[in-house]
Image: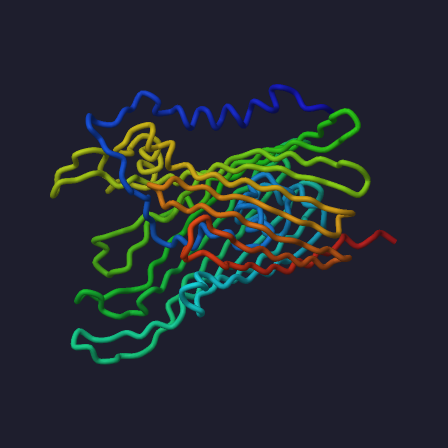
Amino acid sequence: MTLSKKTILTPLLLVAVILTSNAQTTPPDNYIFQFNPITTAVPFLMIAPDARGGAMGDAGVASEPDAFSMHYNPAKYAYIKKDMGIGISYSPWLSSIVNDINLSYLSGFKRLDKEQVIAMSLRYFHLGDINFTSDQGWDIGTYKPNEFAIDGTYSRLLTSSLSMAVAARYIHSNLTQGQDVGGQATKPGNSVAADVALFQRFPVQFDRISGDFSWGMNISNIGTKISYSDDNTRKDFIPTNLKIGPALNLNLDDYNQMSFMIDFNKLLVPTNAITSGDTIISGMDPNVSVPVGMIHSFYDAPGGFQEEINEISICTGIEYWYAQQFSVRGGFFYENKNKGNRKYFNMGAGFRYNMIGIDFSYLIPLETQNPLEHTLRFSLLINFDAPSAR
């Protein structure tokens, strides 16, 4: 089967519809674009947890599936080649500033049959030791704030070239450990969320080079808002995110393979409006329900269509394999200067031998004194083949 024009255009048209859904919106007269990042609770859910994806600019919605596919696109599990596997990853976070913040990730999958795969994961974010003091400055103890998320997914082939997945997630965020903040009692925040994902793959042929073209889409963290106080007067959105993009895998010969991919990400939560007191000057009221916020996220930016475009972050990645045993990877992550201004290169390598895989990655920011500089990720994969019939 060869790749048709229709196949190539399908994901591109999806991106075009999303980006042009508000093409008629224009910013107000004399509007000056300013630093206006989208803020949510539990941003740790957006951190790429593994070294392979981290080395490729955090891209992975359409990359080759592995045990860490839960984060990028759980629909990829239906195409995984192994019968069962687990992945363990660890990353010191913001290590250039502090030395006790880290992200740990554990995931595993099991194939039920040729069409169905189930998977689970646990993400744990430790924010280090924090010394709390009273209003008078008295030491009231050292606490260990943390956040975690537990996921489960079901992935299934719908056709020979298309798969779909749904995932469920429980999120727990304990930032203050019951301490009073500003004279108000606090509590851990809890939320439940879901992912809906698609993945499609087709074989391609370029003269003597074979391979496959794939594209994926994942709407993740569709869930309830989080509150950190008993009166629930303020609830924060969690990072509902749309990730979509293509990938091209090429078998250059019997030993050498190359992959190219690009992901587009857009948070499906309200953009902060420009206000004067209680009056909204530009933009829309962000205090809306989750479904309404997802819809408004395509046209609520104060700067109109241009600002909506600025809210799309881009991840690009390249991966090279020799004999399916040694790999080198590189990538680039881009975020607009008014939406967070994260821009960094990534690099890494991997090794596979029998059932064991080891990966690492290193982050290189474009700016000096960036809190993400020197970020390292380490991952271990253990895969099991199905038992042979006797």
